[in-house]
Image 1 (spheres, rainbow, N blue to C red):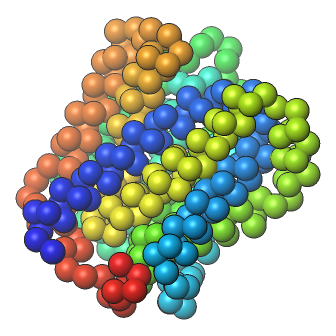
Image 2 (image 1 turned 90 degrees about the vertical axis):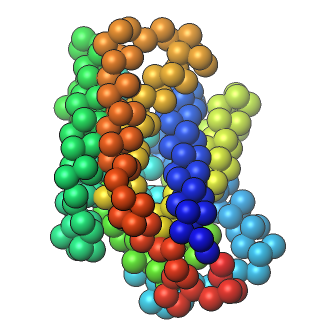
Length: 309
């Protein structure tokens, strides 16, 4: 495939992911009022697994190669399962600003783990962009933090979510060299759903009592911010480095501010807007530079056959 076309498709996929993940914060806030953290995570994963499984059947995707399974299993446990539960729980304990601030440690951890375990380069532009975006995330977090709205437990949970997110991304990257983005996402989602099965009793009881709006939010989380967004993420990650993709997610806090403004009528202050602008500026810096540095997989991926394309 033409490198320029590959670059545009990867950038478009990353953009879809960031927008849908930002929208998830609004949906989680709403659904979390009716669903407990584990039940919400399991419901979202089951919906996502059904959608992804149906797409796999239509596309006749087979099982991932054996070599891809370690990365799929680790990312499923850490990111799809563990991360989903602790983030849902953490957002019930702290305000949105604190949660965004703590979870945005994740891209830094991804860069460090990627450099150590995957040999990802850390060019000056990437480091500078991450520094600018992290400053923006701190600004957004401080501007949105309400007095007394945080708890030690909530901060610890969000920190654990960031660690799970980073570990899952780094584990997923090698698997994408051996299986398609759809395969990696589908079976990672299934692994996460199995991990969350102990919450099945809670989910059944809460679905019976929850209002339709909360359940629809859970379905939205499964279809769009999981099935679609995680697939577009995997597609883009297969074509760039884990560090650069992690830096891209710094745009999420800025978009959350905008979506909360539009959907919930929460008018952001000047400091919040300034922080959001810094987040976006940092992403732009981190993804700038020579095209060759951005595109890792312009050629077909190893062991990725026409059947799994």
